[in-house]
Each structure stands twice: as C-alpha cells, then as structure tokens.
Length: 190
Ligand code: SB7
Ligand code: NI
Image 1 (cartoon, helix red, strand yellow):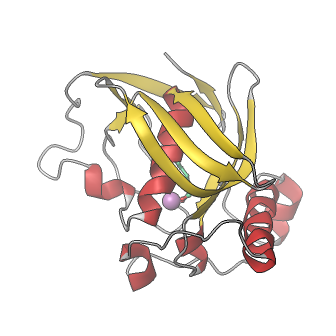
Image 2 (tube, protein in one colour):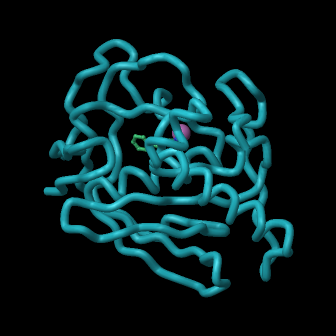
C-alpha cells in the first residue's frame, strides 16, 4: 500500500461505487489495511523507514479502488479518538455555517503545496457502516468535520483544491469561521 495514486489518475476523478453490504471479506481486509496504513504513516519510525507522508485519513480511490470506503485515524484536541474504517459514508445533514483550516489542506495524492482556503461545512452528520459492520451516525464539527468532508470528496472525484477560489485563494468563505490544527493531527475546533 505504499502505492498511493497521484493526481491526474482518472480513478481520483471518478464517482466511486457503493459497497454492497455486508461487505465482502476482501473489502473488509482492504479497509483494515487502509486504516493500518494511516496509523503507520503517523508512526515516526515506520514513516521514515518507508518514506510515508503522515495522513489522518485515506479514501479507497487513493489506492486505486473505486469503492466507497474511507479510513480515518486522528485524535482531536479534546483527546477524542477517531479511528475506524467506514463503508458508504454519506453526509445526511450539514450546517449553514462553514469553516476552513487556517493552514489550508494537503493530500497524500498531491505532491505539491496548494495554498488557499478550502470551504467546508462547520458541522456535518455522517451515516456509514463501520468496520465492525455496525450502522453508525456521526455528528462532527471543526477539524473532524473537515477531514470527513475531504475523504468523502475523494469518493465523488473531488480534490481539495477544486474548492479553492482560483482568483482569490485566501478569500474567507461566506458564513465561515476558521478552525486550526495543532501538531499536525491535533485540533482546536471552534
Ligand atoms: C488536511 C488533510 C487531510 C484532510 C483534511 C485536511 C487528509 C490528508 C490525507 N489525504 O489525502 C486523505 O485523502
Ligand atoms: Ni486526500
């Protein structure tokens, strides 16, 4: 799984297909591997050895699989741990209020720095089926909401920079308050 698909590859521009539930053994194993990859990318020693960039999430299209699966692994500033794999994640409701990371976003599939604010919903509710096969509903805000939106976008062929205003990359989105990441994977939400 060192082979992350890079921008320009058509798989990153496709709308990924729904996973038929219950997921197959193979699909579950793939999602487990994606989660392990994300954990490894945050382990300094392993990351150095395998030259991995640290990520807080990964979407299946990024490993060349056009299916609706994402893996998430990070801890927010309140110490809440988000660590699971999700099948068919779907935003079922969202706030009017927006947010954006004051440091901008990056992507494991993008090997260059793209500057600018990426408008995101400040709060979202996501329905999904987790690795254990349980249907879950997640209420997310701040950084956690941003990460899930970034990953779900990958399932719809959307890259973070597609949201950046090309004429004015640092324009503050309407109805938006900034949100910060601290230490790469720790967050302060508003
Ligand atoms: C900044 C980075 C990410 C999400 C939100 C803000 C994830 C980076 C890793 N990925 O490319 C996952 O798709
Ligand atoms: Ni990405």
